[in-house]
Image (cartoon, rainbow, N blue to C red; front, side, top):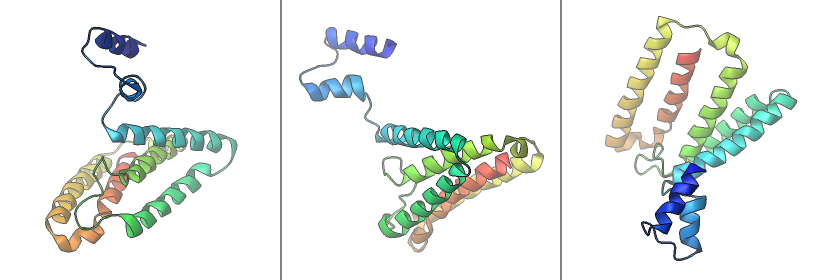
Length: 167
């Protein structure tokens, strides 16, 4: 409510013009120029549906993770532009698969928290190695054209890093 009040105040004092319905939508309904916010919203809606269904039925979370993984690979092979490094760009829709898979993986860790709570020095080292590997692959793929077809590996490194931290 505070956001709405502040936006209304800025419109009333003339800071932001409100000339048409498009201005009203941009100011009050979807107040951002960052498209990934909308994509995250879509992911959260899907996530909550999956989480709700997982409480009622068995293995919904695991099946959803598998389905999204298969769609992720299919979309990468068929639709992803491999002429430049594009898999990590937040303004491209391909990043949705990574967001969704990470959300579901977090739900999986929570669902099976008794297996994933233990802390160890090996987990920290594994996470550091995965993050270093992420940046090495990102630089290598963006500079060596021959590696562009394998750029999806970098997103999998993020998933592996999450497993390294929570496993």
